[in-house]
Image (cartoon, rainbow, N blue to C red; front, side, top):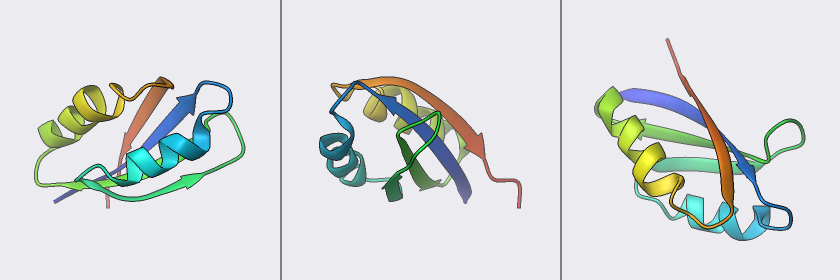
Amino acid sequence: MVHAFIMVKTAAGKSERLLAEIGDLESITDAHIVAGNYDIIAEVDTPEVYDVLQTVSTDLQALDGVTDTKTYIAMG
C-alpha cells in the first residue's frame, strides 16, 4: 500500500467546495483545509505508486478550481 499527501492550491473562494469534492474521490482517505502555501492537504492510500499519479493527474487536477498540486509519498 502506498500512502501519500497531496498539497492542493485552489482558486480564491473555492476551498470549501473543493474540500467536499476531493473527499468524495475514491482513493482519498482524508482531506483538510489548512493555512499556509497550500489550501488543502489530502491523504491518499493506493495499491501502487502509479495509482497515486492517476488520482492526482486524472481525478484531482480535473476539478474546477484546483490551480496547483504537490505530492509527497510517505516513506514509512
